[in-house]
Image 1: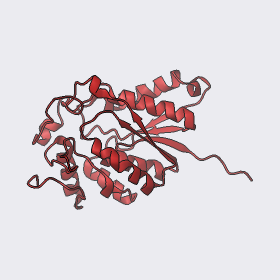
Image 2: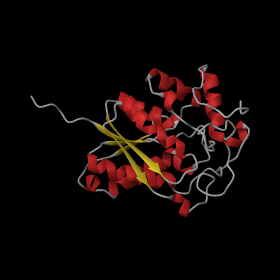
Image 3: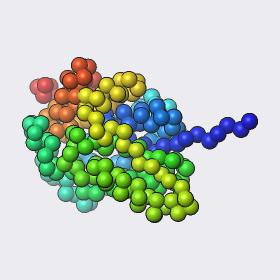
Image 4: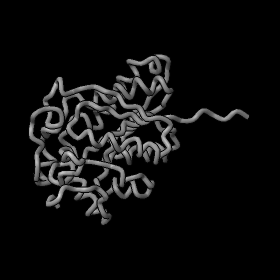
Length: 235
């Protein structure tokens, strides 16, 4: 008897905590993993160096890196000469659209993932969007993800021929502590992840940007040691 074709998922994986746990969720759901990373000129590109090891740890079928230099557009603390916010209180992190928002980044990322999903015949795109920690990012909201699903249906050969490519965001309403606990339960390689928006030349996390603060708070609440190396004096 011929074996049934493998379920496939394209997973947007930056090398960060959320996207790594998202990849582990896709694996847990029975998908063959196709990890997609985007080198977009981000100042924290050190995280991309972690993805090959993450891909190997999760047994991914393929890992693809696409180069798109968003520094040409700018408009973000991650791609332009704009300071990365430091030492902001939790209440400020959760309100408004922060300077680390990259204009239309997730739309671009999902479009690239959609194209690759068509090529490799994936039935789903997995995306580490979260509305609790990053409520200020308009392209992490559930209504945005559903709208992109509708676009995928209208604008692809798969969709026109009656198929569907789902957009899955399994971490959407989880706290950072819950994400860490889930990652541990799935045996995700959390020790390989990097989260800092403003690492130093040695790749050490600053410990003070929004992403570092949320990560440290999450590990503290989960009562698990954070494996990331932080700059001396940042703790």
